Length: 115
Image 1: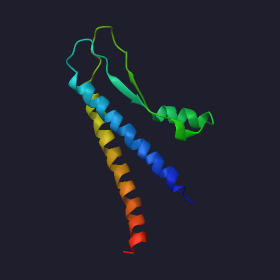
Image 2 (image 1 turned 90 degrees about the vertical axis):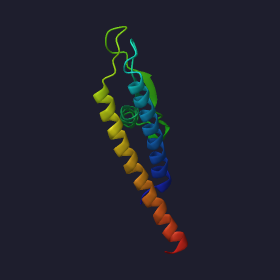
Image 3 (image 1 turned 180 degrees about the vertical axis):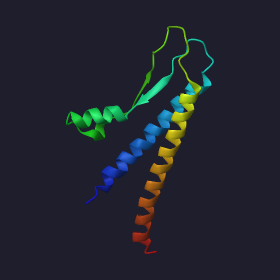
Image 4 (image 1 turned 30 degrees about the horizontal axis):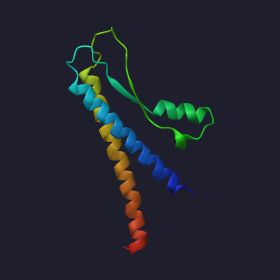
């Protein structure tokens, strides 16, 4: 049996992660020409895998937004094509999650209304 509350909670967290990732990516693109700017990255999937392998509850894992300090000091490390590909992937995942949630709530609506 599927635990719908847990599944819905995970999908909501994924949508929050994708929102944070989109905001970070857009901020990086906006600052691609600023000297010394270091890009932001949102970590979630690796933290989720680590919690699962350590036997910790995965429903407590939260996304972390941090600076990518790679590259020479004073040098911008934003690569436009990487940011755009990340934004495209994020958009596809967002579409998948919203369709999945829409399907779930559509099924609930049919069960309640009877159509």
